[in-house]
Image (cartoon, rainbow, N blue to C red):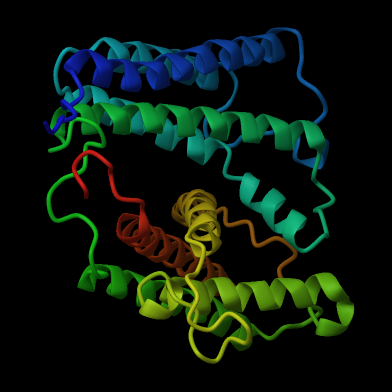
Length: 323
């Protein structure tokens, strides 16, 4: 006699998604209380920058935590698909991500072993905490979507997901490459000035990482050699590429580039409209900033779309529906 495994019940599926939502609520309350204390009593020193967050700060960020808590409770208790609730949760996530956009500078400093003079441990930990909350709330909203809109009661995946990289994913990958090259071309036009390779190993590491993340990484996400090591890679040829090797840095840098340079472009647009453009030390003309920051921003979006495609194609199959 063959025993069949029954599909997960509504109650089981709800428990799986509710704990994420309540975790987001707990984070919002705890982190929000910390932000209230910093506003009322005083915050730690954040160095030359004077702040740990950008865009949404002070009491506005406290209000953002309250919105995150309300959205989390709504996601946990919703009896059916609520698109407005999910959209509101993702809007809060986006605002939080913009607020901790300076994490990109922290990350680059860690990678090249040369932290910015403006780096402070308190600022980094605060931004990392904000990012953790945004990730939790996003996971809760995604679980809500999968619970009510997916075909499978266990994983929430839809029919036809996965397979080969779509045409749009390849277009996005090449757009990321183009964005990287636009940024590089802008630097070539104005000259490298006082940024010679002789400055040290950190500059060499930055330039090598710049080209790897801007050319090799986007294409690896959409072509077969990003899943199986090609013949020209010694010792590894023919073996499966660990999925997190390209996926993790692509996801992190995509979010960082879109957030940081999205804020930068918005600031540049406002300054241009008001006639108060801050050109730093004046070495570069305004056109350089427009081309460079736009290139970074397109690079981030292209990398993110290609990373989503790679994730869908390489994730482990669901044991219940086989997708």
